[in-house]
Amino acid sequence: MSLRRVSILFAFSTFALFAVLVLSLLYFYRGGLFIETLFSERTLFSIRLSIYSATVAAVLATALAVPSAYALSRCDFPGKDAVDTILELPMIVSPAALGAMLLIFFNNPLGNWIQTRGAQFVFDSNGIILAQFVTTLGVATRLTKAAMDEIPQRYEDVARTLGASPAAAFFNVTLPLCRRGLAAAFILSWAKAMGEFGATITLAGTMAMKTETLPIAIFMKLSTADIDGTVVLILIMTAIGIGTLYAVRMISRKGLHA
Amino acid sequence: MLELRDIAAKAGTFALNDISLAVDRGSCHVIVGATGSGKTLLLESILGLRKLSRGSVLLSGREITNQPLEKRNISYVPQDLALFPHLTVEDNILYGLRMKGIKDREHARMVEMLMETVGIKELARRSIGNLSGGERQRVALVRAIAAGNNHLLLDEPFSALHQGLRRELWFVLKELQKSCDLTVLMVTHDMEEAFFLGDRVSVMIDGAIRQTGVARDVYEKPADTAVARFFGIRNIFPGRVRALSKSVLHVACDSLGAELTIPMGAALHQPTEPGARCTVGIRPENVMVLKTDRPSYVQENLLAGILTEILLKGATHTLLFRPAGTATVVEIEVPDYALKKLQLNVGDGISIFFKGESLFLI
Image (cartoon, rainbow over all chains, first blue to last red; front, side, top):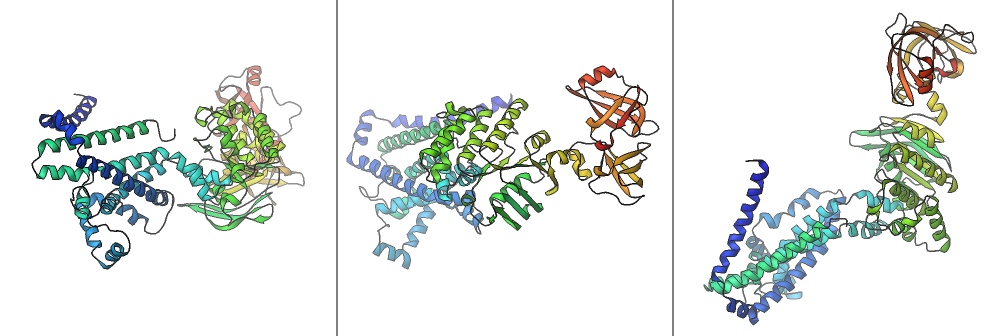
């Protein structure tokens, strides 16, 4: 068998694995229950909370990722390797451990001070946003840096010879040129935040109608052996996830510079 | 005027060494060198993209060594042109004026005239991705000039184009340079381009300027064997001064089995006493081929031998000649019509003749 055929077979095997998992959900699918669960107040709250928190977290992560990614992509500075390495922390440390780290932080004097003088995070919807922000920041920065690496520094240099300040060259040239990469970074961060579970449950808890995001709702349905309800929520999440990834593919297909 | 004083800069293990250069106002100075000789590094150092380890850059007498890039008032066209792909042709060209906050009608008219001069006015609304290679070069040149900087650095801007288009753009650049009174410093590996465009030419080898002068002088009298070899001159022969007078040198070239008579003016560094070692060179196109016996006008520098090879090329051809009693090969460049007229064949016994003023002494 040729290499081409073997590789195509492997690609379809991967597709088949996930397809089987999704299709197996249909065994427990009940049409009437789907509508009932989808439009229940609790599910709608979970969807709204998930979309809201993931959007805020992804916006914050992308906004912070842009200057950091620029520094990592364009500048040499002491400690650059350390900063670059730490971006992978959320991928190395499990989300539950990351949530535990946040919880521990808010139990030390500085964390306490923030909670009493600033905003409440522990067992609060703010905690969801924070947990999602922390878990997606690394991904957002990594993807934004990759998008900026694609844009030659030469463009900024030439813009500056034409009279643009470094900031003007960045905002007029580099940023518009990597806008598609930036959009992809935002969408993937948003998708990751939508599916975030470990850090969120550790920091924000599982309070119905307060900190119950979609992944937490799935966990709670499953823990009460409500398989039908779990299937409905998984299908909703899958639809949102696949829709997001499809959007990323469409954006990427148009090319980085288009 | 752009002036470089003892510039030194490093890029990894490669270094630029003590480069001094003065580009007169309104002139075009071309630095010619092989790939990897440090040409781009030099331009980047002038712009401030590379930190100088010593030396200074002056623009119209004002030191700009530590000025930020955007304050230097030097436009730059890199090899890849770096046209902004997200902007239209017009927005690319107006970028510099917009950054400087210049909005008056006079400048807008000037830009329009520039676009008209180089034939890109009708491309104004096009996106960069839809331009041909030649159109892109024109846009890059106009963008650099439209920014209002009188000094222009060009990094092999025509290297990606085919010969015909390249020649066309040489004329465009010449016209723009004269009409806009531009001071241009250009680097290239193309000798023809250098000698066509350069009022003055410098030769760069391994991070150092080996020779600078008026284009014709550099072409005719390479300063050393490295420069001569860079120009592709293989007719370089070791010799020893046998005698010298006020007007001529007599140099014995054992490898040619002959004594050559060379006017004093042919040497950049003239040997002062008999017995001094020297190197004699001649461009292949300056070697005359004689099919007949010694003509009356030839008194000296005549060599008899065998034609060993004819390499057909196109407009000109290369002949290889071996002087009698030697193993040396002399390269000769002859025009197509001359080869046809002489009706030469490999193995023919011929004579060659070096005009004294065509010989150069290193």
